[in-house]
Length: 107
Length: 107
DNA sequence: TCCATATTTCCAATATATTGGAAATATGGA
DNA sequence: TCCATATTTCCAATATATTGGAAATATGGA
Image (cartoon, rainbow over all chains, first blue to last red; front, top):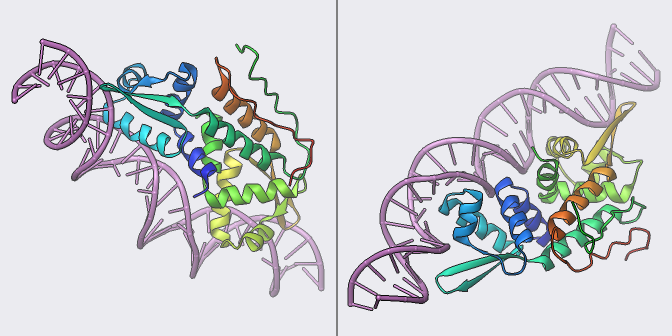
């Protein structure tokens, strides 16, 4: 299956989008599953299910560290997704500027 | 519901992504439902169902023209979606450049 | 008004996704 | 080895999405 469809489907769900958002804000280091469950108030089993989806879509990376499993956002996939969508938005015709400035601070 | 979740869900489906892609390539003028059905080889009822999803997600605009209903991509929503995803990708931390250049020709 | 064509709605069958409790598994430390 | 803790897997209930044929609706032209 198209990687983009998988990624879009992974993000098109409230709980998973919240997980991903939090992981993006957290940065490279990521968070252990328990932390995610606590901060987002999601039952363990449910969180585990959604994390599996995100990992399978390659939007999230899991790494074991002792008894904990740390999850972190995979920025590379996210950028590929943005690239894909941009092509599908702009391909063949002008489209208004998207205004991306990752280096600037946002409020 | 969050507009982004709706838009992501709308695009996270093979048939709908194909419809949207074709409409983007077609540009402002759009295509009548019959044309879409023929070009993508989708049964009328199925196409109608997916178009409804896309319109409801505001990714596609419908306009009646005589006996035909023309469907066209809504670039404005698509750009909002890209903006939303970019924020959620970059928010609070550096992320690699997304390389968007809508004005350039792509192959 | 009547017909042909475009498109949608209805509907029922089917497939896929989501939820969360309980049990299973894995790990580090004592 | 044994225990406590972290996390996943299992599973069954439930909700949502997808499919496409047939019938319904809408429109322009004769």
